[in-house]
Amino acid sequence: MRILMAGAGATGGYFGARLAQAGKDVTFLVRERRYQQLQASGLVLQTPQGTETLQPQLAQASSLTGHYDLIIVTVKSFALDQVMEDIAPAVGPETLIMPILNGLRHIATLQQRFGEDKVIGGLCKINATLGDNGEVIQMTPLHQLYYGALDGHNDARLQRVDAALRDCQVDTRFSDNIMDELWEKWLLLSTLGAVCCLARGNTQQILTSRGGEALLQGVFSEILSVITAEGYQTRPAATARILELLSDPATPMTSSMYRDLIQGFDIEADQVIGDLLLRAKRHSLATPLLNAVDVNLQVYLQQR
Image (cartoon, rainbow, N blue to C red; front, side, top):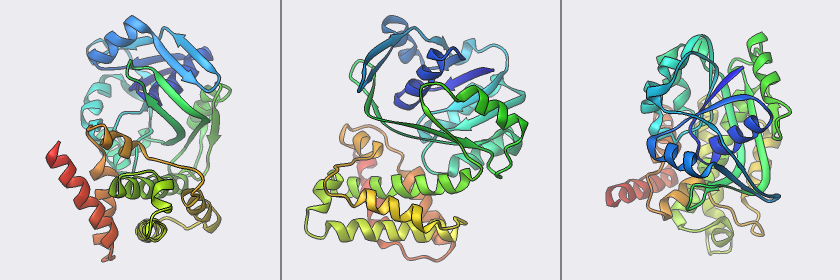
């Protein structure tokens, strides 16, 4: 199976490296700067177990040749439009596209461009970032990769994807209910991103501050009400685990959006928070805390 990894940041770099190390035919589609960096230094993984370096197979949009069986999209959501242009020549009749992006808006966007039958569900759970020299830093052993058909029907095409991705030094989850997994991931990351960006701190700092626990629980409740109105079939045990994880003052957590914000980078405000507000409006739901977060993020983007 020919696999194109669109992006070689923390997510694409880590999972793509693991696939390549397992002998899979993986090509990384990258921009010029990242291309030169990886050509010069290789793809460096810093994990809790040590440092590994590999020489990846690289391509730029102008040099893509032939169709790929699986395209895994791992860029930031605000880069999706350009990436769709870049990967278009690599999409053939049998190609499947698996986006690993935050939120859910990207699914409809990809389906509109390439067709509903081309897009499958995907998400990852990993605590990773890029270092100053472009190295992928895995901060904890967590490295889960979920995938499955959006309609829950994992046919022969999805079986081939599973066969290609399993046994590649990562924890793979072939899901027959990927949509609920996607809703729950959005609930987790949007709550985490909202409270960290609004309070400008990690969850430990927030939860030990006056009113911090109420803030987190209030944001969580607003988001849960939105995604439930949008079609999420609530799984109480799963949502309880998410709230318990977020509410543990002994474990300081931050989101990638918060880490991008404090470094002055562009952020996925529209895709993570703004889209929730659009969906809330559709159902006439009151979301004052999310609105406060959204204003905060818009001001940040104006001031960048």
